[in-house]
Image 1: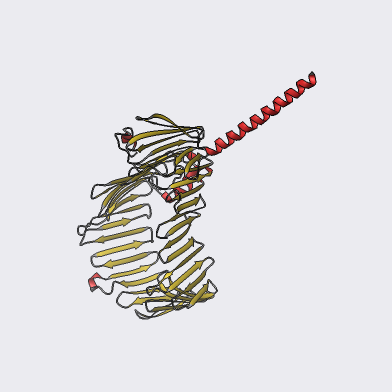
Image 2 (image 1 turned 30 degrees about the vertical axis):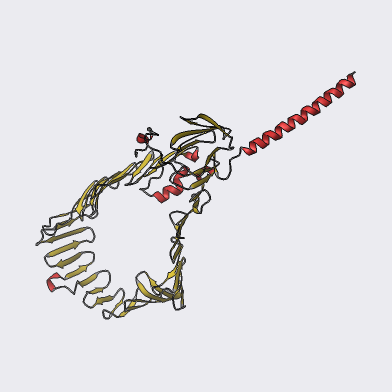
Amino acid sequence: MNVGCARSRNATGARGGRSGLRAFLLSCVAWLAGCASFDEEVYLAPAYSRYSRAGGGTESEALAGAVRLRNASPRGALTHWALRPLVSEYREPNGDSLTRFLVPLGTISHAGDEHVNQLLPVWRYQSGLDANGQPVWKFLSLPGIFWSHDASGRVVRAFFPFGGVIENFATFDRITFVLFPLYLRTEREGRVSTNWLFPFFNRTTGTGGTSGRIWPLFGHNSFEGQYDRWFFLWPFFHWQHNDLAKPPNARERRWMFWPLIGHTAKGTYDAWTFLWPFFGYARDTETGFWAWDGPWPFVRIHGGGRHPPSEKRVRFWPFYSHYVGDGLDKYNYLWPIVQTSVENYPDRIRRAAYVLPLWQRWRETTVDGHESSWEKLWPLYQNYVGRDDSRFAFPALNPLWHLPVIDDHYAWIYELWTREVEHDVIHERVWGGIYRREHDRFEDRRYFLGLWSRRQFVEGGEPIEAHSLLFGLLRWRTSASRGVDWLVPACPGPGWPLERSHEERTPTESPHLVEEDARP
């Protein structure tokens, strides 16, 4: 009897086990059938997310924002990738691209036929085509390596300070050196300057005439029709005639017995220097301009000038200064802590105020009435508002001025909340992508971890609102005509299609958006 009962229980257990296995397998099949496909959104921030980006295209983000990929469409070309803060790249449809690494020092750019690769100040490589369409390239790196190739196929090399040739560099046509400073020769627009034991011995010939020096005993540097300059027992005795192409009364004459006294005269302008650079006085009897320095750099006062309007300055450094000139009106208090300024340009006016490092603000107004502004209350927030775009971020730990490239590569580490607006496109993000909003005129999508998401769009002219809960296990949509429709699971959710709706939403369909979409 007991044996029979045991057999009966074993048979029942076996049938129950097989039924449980079938139920488990059917559950797995149902779950797999409900998995999000590669054309649907997955939101598991901050670990990984793949979603439709407002304004078009898709974005994938991983590791709280350290990894970022953007595509032009769900199955379209890659337009941007980043491994922040180390490296990022933006690609244009025409094939141009810009890669940044070790920001702000390194860039790699491709623009048409030109390629530039640099890590400042370590190296710089540039290649492209000359005016005749022939390939040329240059390479410069520390500790003084220069290598270039011109259209004729000729290659020039230099390894500073040992020897070499450098062409078309730093305004010079050609630089030749051997065991610098033993020998150095420079050429620029037909003017050839040869140096031995630079800077002691020099001779210059060619365009502009002949010059030379035996430093520090004497030196003569002249250019026919431009200037004539001498020194003796440098730095003590100096004499110059400048602006030689002008009439005699418009030429500049200078002399100095350093550091005791110096004099500059040009027409009605007259200036004296005493114990350079500490004391100086200047005046122009024709314009009324006058200036006083002393003791430099603490006190500087100058003004006057009737035609043309002259600059004016009052400085008692570091307590107070005021400067007016060349379209700028600027005040400093306890330099460099407090600063206010008004800058007048032909096409705009900029007003700025800074209390470093806590407060920075500027506002621009163009002649056609458009305004843009930027402000930062460090370390709490920063807010930029342009003509067609804006960006707000909290907090703002970077004490530097407005540098979007720096923020793009580093600020994701500490920004808890950001809001970016461009026309009718809104991107909102909480640190790591824990919460995100992607809004444009077609859809409004919001996400919170993998737990919740809402999608608002229009289908067949009717507003639709869809919801996803618990990593896509529960999904439904509501509309006025059909009420509630349950959707199949799409784990790990939310499972919305990466391709956005193409029917425009109107303020009537979503009245709350009118106020929400106002710029900060």
